[in-house]
Image (cartoon, rainbow, N blue to C red; front, side, top):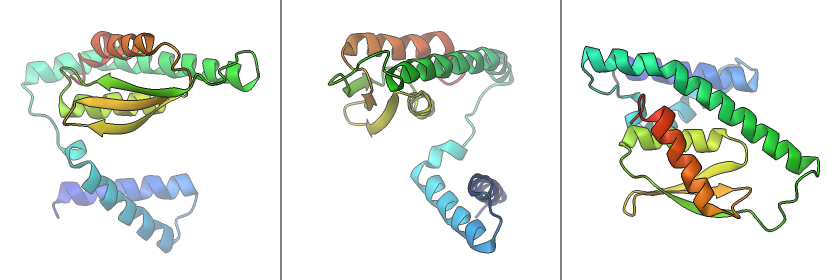
Length: 165
């Protein structure tokens, strides 16, 4: 195992220990096992993309805009879910599954889009179908699938593509 992999395992194990609030050796060992599993399931996540210095700086400059857009998206999604929870909006029988095309996204772009979907309350990634090149997501309000597809594509085109294509 390379030094980089060991560093990733240790950092993920420490993150797990912080999340469970325990640094007991058993918890650290379980965190390391889970970290190895995550690294095995998502092997590309640890590989940095090969970029020219100019491209690296261009993406770095767009990163704050992506971060801000992500924060706004999560805040809006939280508000929408809260309106459902407190009964101001009825979504009975509107939940559903929507297939979002991967389009021109790279493998890393698909990973980030999947993460963004799952981070936003009200939507969660269910499956990545690489053969059909679709990301299957469950949405709390899937009454207008075309609008969901437009929202996903708009976020990718406006904010994510410049940083994680």
